[in-house]
Length: 89
Image: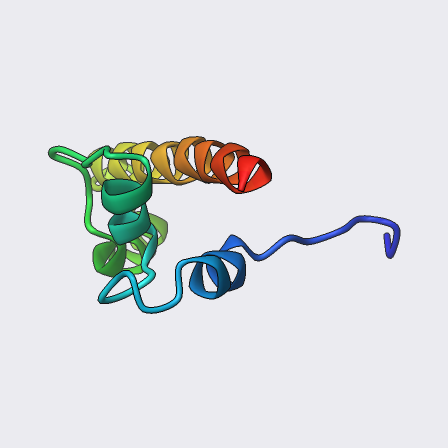
């Protein structure tokens, strides 16, 4: 459906906060902009690996899928909060 729109918050954050942060990764923006730090969650660089392991053997790696879902939940939650902050800027 070409009627759906996509907003890339990464580029908006880089433009609005240019030079303020060392990097504009989601976790860094969460820490700097939202003053929120994830605790005990799966690092982004392991999400793909865990998902592939789950697909190879779902029964054995069901726990990994829980971690992936939790990681994605926090991604969506923080993106919503970042979007709210950007709307106020």
